[in-house]
Image (cartoon, rainbow, N blue to C red; front, side, top):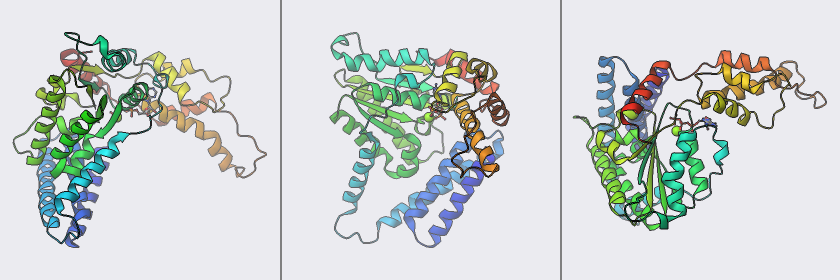
Amino acid sequence: MSQSMLQQASNYAKKALQYDQARRYKEAINNYLNAATVLQKLITLEQSKEMRDLYYRKAREYLARATELKEIAKKPVSVDKTEGDESEDEIEAAIAETIIGEKPNIAWDDVAGLVVAKSALREAIILPMLRPDLFKGARKPWKGIMLFGPPGCGKTLIAKAVATEVDATFFNVSAAAIISKWLGESEKLVKELFDAAREKMPSLVFIDEVDSIATERSAGEHDALRRVKTQLMQAMDGVTSKAEDRIVVLGATNIPWDIDAAFRRRFEKRIYVPLPDLEARQAIFKIHTKGVEHAPEVNFEELAMLSEGYSGADIALICREAIMMPVRELDAAGALSDTSVQVRHVSKGDFTLAMEKIRPSVSPSELQRFDEWFAEFGAD
Ligand SMILES: Nc1ncnc2c1ncn2[C@@H]1O[C@H](COP(=O)(O)OP(=O)(O)OP(=O)(O)O)[C@@H](O)[C@H]1O
Ligand SMILES: [Mg+2]
């Protein structure tokens, strides 16, 4: 994976340079920031210190150039508006985009397993929003909740289910996007985001990939990044200190150990979203093959037993692969255009073949790291 990410970073950097030379600043800035974001991710994955240092230097270089270009890009004539207005408008538009107008339409039952996480979220978010009158005095609702766990196990999914369930304004924010698109102005964006949340209470601010902002502070880190961290902390403090504010911040991360201790403390509840257990895997197989006919010998319980160690996203992928096989066969036989030929039902063999192709994406050593972190810092 890191190989392809390196390729990705280098592609962004190459494009950035081309745009930079062509004086197409906006595109150049975006590409520099994208390159830096990918490099920052790579730093968390890279084993070798030498390579990490190299990525770090490069990322700083790109961020610095992007900031420089932002200054340069501001100078040319702007016709009617002053620059200030323009960026205000853009920020407003960006915040409006994060508000989910329509419910995501993910029901609680679409999320398999995760019994502990579901009941914790119910208690922390759904009940206080449903019955604010019960949460008075010392019985305070939680204001900061963090979901953590290996990739592809339903953190984002369960947040959407919460949004469907509660009657609150749901702000869906990707921290990675804030940093990469708004680096220079992300501080302001965070402030205005929380202002908007306060205006539209009750609100649920979901910050996905919160690690992109809330990582441990480091000595050489970019100024803008440091400022946005401070801003987010202040915003969260504001939410916690005002009992009458009905705003909940829900964060999600798959690298909880990179989260700054100060942020960790502000997420009072830290809920583990683990790999699916046997029962959940069985349900996930069913959810992701819904509406497609399978042969009677396909036994979901057996599939669930065979798929220990797979994440929900892995199983979803297995299902996609398996249910495609009959179609692929039909195509190979040249019979796809003949609508009188019936497609065969998905067989047990299709699933086992798919499972051989798709291996678990989370390694046992990673899992151990989550268990250890949960034992030390979990709070559900
Ligand atoms: N418990 C589950 N029940 C049903 N589907 C699941 C479950 N967990 C994962 N999936 C499937 O995997 C997909 C990816 O899950 P999701 O995006 O919620 O993962 P995540 O935990 O947010 O991962 P990441 O840390 O990479 O952001 C979902 O869209 C869904 O199709
Ligand atoms: Mg996610």
